[in-house]
Amino acid sequence: MISKNFKTNIKSYLTIDIGNSFIKMGLFNENKELIDFSMFPSKKIDLDKIISKLETYKMKNIVSVIMGCVVKSYWEKLNLVLKNVLSIEAYRINEKTKFSFDSSGFIAKGIGDDLLALSEYAVRKNENSIAFSFGTSNVGLFIVDKKLIGVSISAGLESSYNSLISKASLLKKTKIDRASLLSYGQDTSGALESGYFHHRNGFLLSFVNSIKAKYDDKNFYIVASGNAATSFNNNHFVEINKYAILEGYLNILTINIK
Image: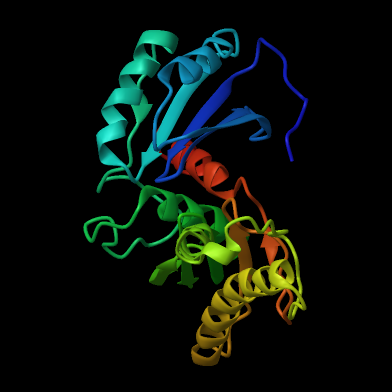
């Protein structure tokens, strides 16, 4: 939820997530409330639009910026834009970065910045957490006793769906409700909606069940984030927070700029 609680004389923080499909920016006030959110396609970056957005932040008293990136070639480009427009450089996650959890060498293994941010968000909720990101890929990760244990990655909902549509000529003009909870369909759109739901729900359910079976003495907090994170239909309570990764970046920033 985006807060309208902002005064020009208080500090604010900018978090940026550069993903394979989108660049997301979140502006937070000093109370860690999200006060502005914007999103831009990352396949073909329109720097003019990003610069125009950053221009509107000049009076927001931004004291720190953190930028995570899975498309490494974009990081320097956008950091230069930040320096030119806001006269500030972004904090970059590295092997010396501190977290509220034990990252267990995952940075050296190449884990994405966004997943570290998601882990940071989740562990602030519960030291035993299961977190999901539904975007270009479906990702599940879990933390036990504040230690990141493992990650699972599969093809994303949209990439799988778009691949199917591109190869099946009869489906190309079909429109679907991506938030549908249909168990099954009785026409083409309904069948596709059902498949989309089962893909999303099935990945989450399988991952959660496998973790809970191994750690049956733990009570896990579960959160889902990402553009394709919508409703689920299973026996687990799942918090849906599309800003969880941006909030996680903010938490990482505040730990490391003291």
